[in-house]
Length: 261
Image (cartoon, rainbow, N blue to C red; front, side, top):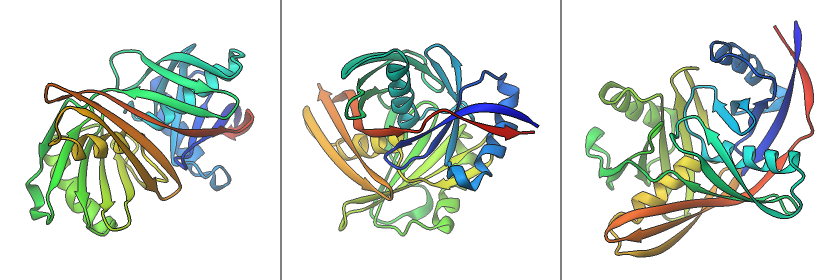
């Protein structure tokens, strides 16, 4: 047994365990499996600090919520008082991301990587239409008014994995009557499926899909999810999405030590 340092972040209920000690990528999966098995941590996903301003998700996917939390963590570590901006490098994204933070009220706002593509998704004979949104590192299927069950998720996952084999994929179940979003995400490397408290990249995908047919302008979407709310802003110019931002509060635990094998 050995002790490692961790911190638990809560970005809109998407509980993320950050491993603060540095490990080779070959160690990510076994460490993550042990941490996720610790019920007292209530983790949904695990992220690894890989450098001064670099963070890797366990499956090397992209995660907007973890990115927001990582930026706030760095801001506090650097002694930023109140508002500031932090540049980070994260898995699943090939360029640095700039995150606005406020260490007084724990607010974070990040410019997300714009989707590589948005298209109508006709597979699986789903009613009410669906969209495929490729976030380069995770593919999301955005659907409306279908019950967020594991059966429905697995049906869609099978089609997506067979056709695209992405490192991670999600189904964003949107309820139009209640204006709520239930995100379900699968990560290939750890072979895990989670009904998440919230999902940053999924929120981005929903906002991008819902504004796909709209003219140029700025569009705001506040999406209530099982454990929190995330607001997304989409900017469109000349028929294409030029920027997407997500924002919301993040809480961070104190640094703690846990034992792993």
